Length: 601
Ligand SMILES: C=C(C[SeH])C(=O)N1CCC[C@H]1C(=O)O
Ligand SMILES: [Zn+2]
Picture 1: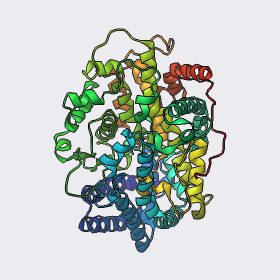
Picture 2 (picture 1 turned 135 degrees about the vertical axis):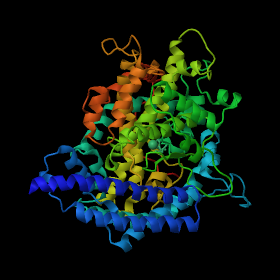
Picture 3 (picture 1 turned 30 degrees about the vertical axis):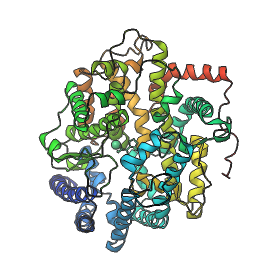
């Protein structure tokens, strides 16, 4: 009768996929309504739909697990049942599920609605500065350590500090939910996404490959910050003060480029000014990205996308500005919500989000259960991979954002690699430590009484940065980062920043812009796959798979490899790595930050 069970199981799964699509559509609509317009009414609606959906999903799950799917013959049907047999947080009893949803929504609202007073305004009257765009712009542009410190500290007082107790409750409920799904804790539940039992070891090995390059970049940037801000502010052997790197979380350092660039006086490669001079708008930025995907013979954004997306910050209402891409699971409705500003940094974020939408479009005919990335890192890598081509000076000249200048100047080339490293290499230790901290919290090796101290130990050990003022357990600095309060895993971005270079190398080869037999003949960092249908077709074929196969199969389909491999990233940055080692030797810069973090006066 197993034969009959499998026949019945096939019909059951086909129906279940259709039902789950309708439930997801309903839930995503309510979540979109709330995230794009934070009101009590929309919060209630979102919570009610979430509770209702969880009840139905749990009922279906009780039927699903009754099938003897482990003994089915059809591998694909077995994979669908295997995925559907993990219920997730809906396994919690109703009251605890509601508590968990409420806690996450409350923390997200605190973050989204946080407003700061302007630096130097002691009257504290008009404290209306939001993270996007005002405070992010201050962190990017101010060169006053005092002003930077003001926004750095006040942001943490207005977000993380207010979420500390909520977060402890969140952790307890997440671990309860994990145990109800037969996982030891929420760390194991999150890591299950990568379908490999040594995943944590794998990412640690990848970090070990990259760390020497990061150390060289850190030493060089610290040297330039020391020149600018002096020994007192930036000690030559110490960790870098977190507020001086141009970003609220010190996760990318691109905004420090103007005073850390290796060779001054070369052709400008920060295209923000050109974008402004050419009257770029957010819509033009999105159209530019759409055009690149179409040039690869990939899908154009559907009409509904342009009608339903929110690409500029709407006035007169509260909303979650953190950029996001949404699948409504009906094969037609796909949206981006982004408070876009006209800068080069946001041009890359636009491509990042458009990459998510392209993935949704490519796998829209998969059964609902497979409407995911091969793993969550794949989903984060699509747009960034395209942006690696867009960001090249060659491409920027092609689209008129850089004036067509003649010779390829090796120093300008180093400047370009350096600017890319300020985003891609600087990011890696942050992308790694975010979930090292959370895995520790879920496993209980990091206890609530040490949340903040352990956070800063990791920030010191992996990033070599330190806080501009003393931190205590009154503070909760992880909660000043969206993904922590928003219940969004983060190792996916570390994975993405590694595999996007594997994808880039494979696509460049298909586009005839890279020769693995002679890697320096056409340098990987100068490759632009624009208009290559060979590259586009290969990428599309991999994206169409969704999560229908284990991710090594998807990786192999595009790159021929079955593992994550940092060699592509190291190949891309090789010229810069050599230059940094020579330069740091020339200046006698010390490598590393062995001096212990000075507890700030
Ligand atoms: C742009 C998004 C939405 Se998926 C994002 O959260 N990113 C993109 C890169 C890293 C991470 C961050 O901002 O922290
Ligand atoms: Zn993303």
